[in-house]
Length: 627
Image 1: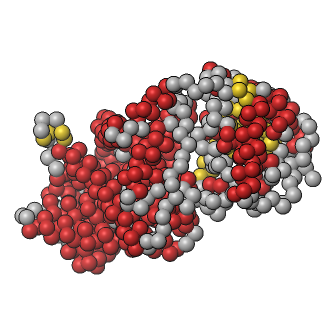
Image 2 (image 1 turned 60 degrees about the horizontal axis):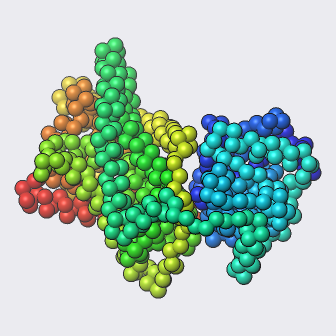
């Protein structure tokens, strides 16, 4: 049997309620020495990092999902409970659990701590944001609190340099006490009555050990008078979303142009220094033109993740969820669905994973099914390219960009279709279900921690680039191969691609997609687009680059405008509003729901919507003379 002092490396786990400052503490302790992966067997993001204590002990720190209880009503609670109890196969349990509490709001954390005591795991209570509590007049008798709770207590200020020194020192002290890390596996979930009894005990401890000031009017309460107002609050929300999308499509433009010019110069360099042939075609048309056409959108993706992380850290997301509860409730959605759906504007994968905050399975399933309808960042390359090619860059009413208005319309169509699908699910699948009242704790407003935001944005940008360097690169190699082989016969007069496997496949599928206005090149691009949406644009770039030579690779927008009708362009835009998400998203749906049934439901209804909506759009546009 091992004890903490005998271990070369300690395993610590961070547990706490949402918005308690757990992530800030994790970043303060581990800095850049952290990694992001999934828990074994489930698509739930886990963060682990390392640091060294003052005594020289190497520590592995695991940031567990925020939870209010260990009852296991949601995947988040399951993960936290199972990690604390050591139920993950081939993974050691934590030697010490750090229960992190927001010192300004201790009530629910104390109940969680009393639950954690039932697991018999070594515990340390970390009173985080202790400086804010002190400024507000909160007085804590630390010695009595430790005695009442029966666990050691330490304070921390994760956002201040040196604010974790006491925690590090206390960790060394506990490690030196030979505390056994082994636990008898006889823990049982508590009943509602037992949880209520624990809450009464927590309230008694707070009354005995903590002196709370009278509730003065704080900055948080003054801001909430505006942002939670039923009218003014919605206007603020619309303004924030408008600013976010303007930033995504306007502020990122200079950096995107820099990326585009760099890839164009790189392609020209390859063209000028390599002889004509397969190698030149592969590097210029397959790798540079294909992958580069996706990487160029990295600034937009970084910006939308930046906005979401800032809103989360500031404390506004919970307010937005409350504001949207009434609107979303009419469509059969739970108020907590707002945050996953907003996250899906960046990517449906973290959006679907964020549905773990929704306790009820039916509410969670509904949100998972409609999250892919949100306009994710992978659609941005498709929308931007087609809008730029077919919508004039002019102002209407003197100040509104016509292209921006079309983009806003596509986003609005995704949102409205998601609400409509949710309403259909409510009226057909779960007619007898009444959603539970929406209850959510509103955290105090806090200035976002620059270091945490930078790490979060860096992690997501790195994941996107890894995807561009793996999935997208692999798909582009495949597309280039299909578009290049077999080689044309001697004396051929048509473009080389017309003799290729891609042409054969595209022409075989074309009759099925012809009613939508899609040609064989589009049919070829849609297939690898199932691996990742943005691959479709890269595939079109590769197909048309090989078909039209160097000019087509550099001027793909002009090429599309010359080869497609406006009706076809509108049909493709509508297709991408509804079409099934990438294969990675479907895999996440499978792992989050635990069933292929919901993958089939999601794929079928989105494919059906995409086909008939595109069919209607194309036929109507043709009848109006746009064909």
